[in-house]
Length: 632
Image (cartoon, rainbow, N blue to C red; front, side):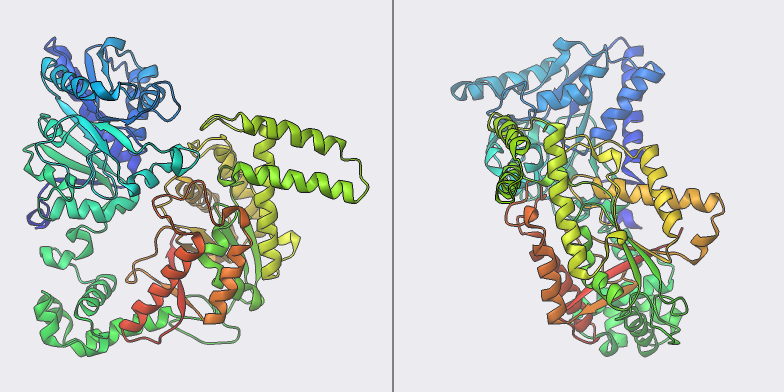
């Protein structure tokens, strides 16, 4: 069973929302139990994006179900240093905005390390923090998140299992991952105060939450060796710890990645493909060179027994991969291709490419985008959000300065634009970190990105009527934190789809987007199709939905259902298309924990996919863009 691989119990939920609801219910049970005994409930709390849904659910339970926090004493894990308590980015502010301001916890029961402590007194304050936890009776229930390097709290790799609350240096990748909370990387503190590993392990119960792109570090922490190099792996030593994760964060666990090793395998074509590809890559052999001995050595003897010799299985998997490769993403006119991933009989197709931000189309599927247009299909681009949050302030003054100069050159009265430039420049000069832009500045930033998107579409060959700017309302908060999917977002998307009635829809299935925009955009599309199907829209019977991945990750090769190869010239053409988005080049304000530019990420990802196909014995291409079909 998979429990023999997982050294920490893992509970997998379909979505982060459901996992957060479970954790909230567990906390509520403990609070009620302690209330019945007349005791305080001591909670250890985490910050960051991971527990936000948990806190929302606890607030809902308080407001709608009467859950009281009057007997709760809380201790937060960490805080940046130095930082003012009322700073927008402080965890003091975070906790009050997301939880404490909305429940009835007593102010004196809230304990958060103070980023304003004098450095000479830090050790004294940290010792006092530890003693306060002891005086409260210890942590009853500790909530944790996990960093991509395995840190818990701000205990970076190398933190001792005996460490206590202290001041610590933050690794650069941790600072990059947290850059979204600040204007730029230089403003992210290099130090933080954190509860130690020893402090965490003293908690009576621990739940670690992990969503989306954390699959690799979750697997290492749960199934790997206990090592201080991966602080979360030290949780294996705790008697009452569990991981609560969503399906995307579970993909690297043995039960999902290699279920045949657990004795739980049901040999479907999809699983056979996964197992054989995994074996081929580990042996370094092309698929057609695998032998019966390889199957036995890789614990796939049961597959041989059930499906026959290695030669037949090899051919089956080889043909699956071969048939996924096509230079005709919309199908080939007048062709009969039984194994082709797309239908050939409908030609030309009407195609809608949904792009969460105004550059995801060219970054994630630029080669396919251009092929679809060049092969005669009616391609429409729907830019779901304005993307204005990702434009630097410098670009605003640069373009306003151009507008003033253009009017002057053209003998047009530039009085109004000059006043706007002066007003905007004055605001930006005095702008505080994380201060929300004025509506006018946000509109200018959105215009900059629309101009870049239009230029990209012209570069590909699209006409103005094929370009649609949705500016979905959920995105327009002016801050990094976006609203959940709303009714207007869905209705607007349904209206566009019903107007165009496409045969193909491409949308971003990349849930590793560090700011959640891609996830909301995908949910909106899914909800729209579900409603239209329930309403009996006839046209969707002829529509297929394909998912691409964005700037942060690629589909596992065993999942790919349509692979679009690219020549070296096509790779360069795609790169030039990405370069059109000048506001996103060289320095992007919010790019997650990957410091490379988007064109570099895309090229490496596409090149790596092509290399994997070649290693498996298929034709070697310069690059490949990959897609998986969503069945609604």
